[in-house]
Length: 482
Image (cartoon, rainbow, N blue to C red; front, side, top):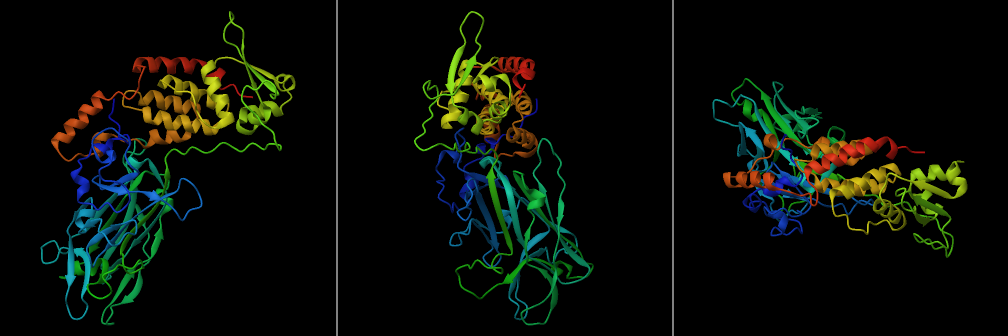
């Protein structure tokens, strides 16, 4: 079986990898998420499979579950900054912020009165006319985030018609898309003059919304290619992030000219748990689960032939407000609706009680001791079309996924229509292809943890597969909806 990249795996990276990156947010670098222990990491991502990215709540959004992240590069200081905190450098030097680069150099131009700084192809070498490129990678899997929007400022200039600068973007490799392709980012070059009006060139400094190319992904790779030119100074004809070397205040101002490279990302959790719909109550109306005096509907659970059915006293207003299954049943003219009662089977008393109590209070109060409990619950939530409860099960089951049970839990998710969990499985990738560690010691630790990790308790893999086979046989009954 392939070794898949689960969201927890970036925790294995060496702590030294983050010590060169500033911790600009309120996240404590000494917290458990920055060690190799299997503990819950802070909300973050990874830059170039190496440096921690600190995702923060989007305070400008009126919606819940909205987060944001920003990386900006200032050429004059030759430094990256994170989350609009400009008094502390996130990474020093353009090279540290790149995943890959070739034939690129930081250039200080002192000719005449220009006094400019920029990135360009290597000067004074036999490669000055050859192509150069840079790749950056942003990965938000470790924080369990998906991209909802992406805006980029990618300032670049060309000084000759024989050269070009091409930007492109691709999603990260996943199991469903192991070899993603780069999509071009359109350039809006405009005629521009140098500050002394001596030279004319083409420049693009616009903010681009590329959300349509990357929305719903865990991350992306951004690439720029510097191409062309047969003349001696061809390297100088393609420039990135061109900026004045001197002038201005030491304090950075957040404007169009300060950051030639600016990545602004809005994110959402990969699994969202929505609140239950509100129940419209009359003044003073009180509805409690299993309250025989006020209930107007009885659910009778058929246990077995030797025992009496277990009865639950419920309220139609609660059932119809929070379950599409019960709404359809109660709105119909079926016998159950007219009689004010329903007989159920093929579901355990424990699972049914959890479901009914959840419809009333929106919480799961009983302790679910094994993965079998969660599987029973997601089948029940799917059966009764309780979308919010399906989401809770998705979130819990995702935390229980490992290399041994991934295929079985994925099959259950697909059978139950658990869309967020299905998307999570589609986004997995082969750890051997993508995840890197910093030393042989880390690799050995990662392999040992992968081999010995047992995140599932009270149930073995063989038993899990038996559960799935049993559920699969019952699926037609379980999903026999009104």
